[in-house]
Length: 115
Image 1 (tube, rainbow, N blue to C red):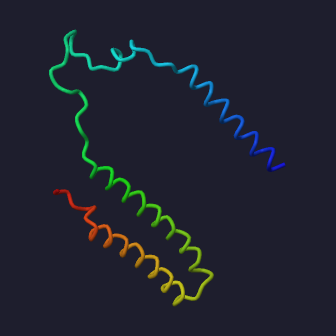
Image 2: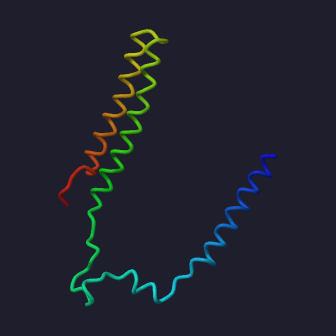
Image 3: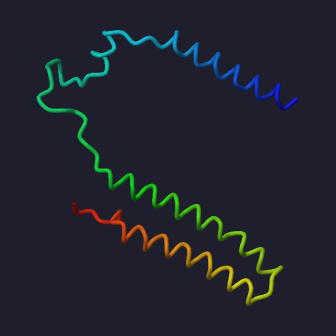
């Protein structure tokens, strides 16, 4: 049964990829549609300015640390089950992992904005 489901999943994926290939043919006319338009004349400068990679790095760091903080939320329920000292020990371990990750990113230079 599982093999059939995997086969069906792969078959549907291949069918969708083939349909996408045939339906989405790009033509030369699409180049004009995707170019910038400034009141009927050719633009003098590029409309797409380069974007700093540091914004992406900070965004990824935010997502990683946000997910790690989400792992802290079940610790509230563990407070009822575990001994207080064990709970504090586990919380400190998780927070230490967060802190070490932040220090590693700082040491690596991902948090610097100057080249």
